[in-house]
Length: 178
Image (cartoon, rainbow, N blue to C red; front, side, top):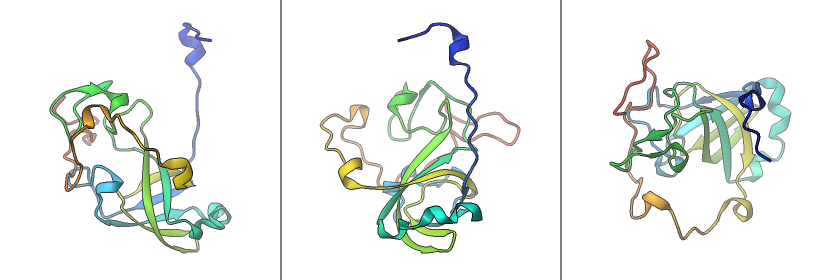
């Protein structure tokens, strides 16, 4: 049931990071635009010590979903021009980081577990990104055949890296084309 009262949507959600993601990428420009196009870029996921017990049995998975905060993304843009197109699209039809809730999601390859650190590859996030959660990638749950891919049809993310269009400037202003 839909409620048009704006007060009914005013819910404060508090999330605390469970760790930090370390990658070679210091700024958006030059960062892979998706983990599938990261060409094996390596990183380390460091959990805060109190979350280490949650890593039990993680080593048995080849891939993991990392859920993280896009803490350096520009303010939300409800229409945006993605890296792989010249036309504007609705934010929910893109993977742009300038989203209403600045939540990122990447499927990374697990290379090893060492105490509270996960060695991973195919990273596509900035160094120091706050980690919100980890989930195992399970093909039976996470892999679907899709016949429709919208505006992405016929495109490829191979060798495409980010520019700075969705990153916040130090003054708080967003850079970019839009």
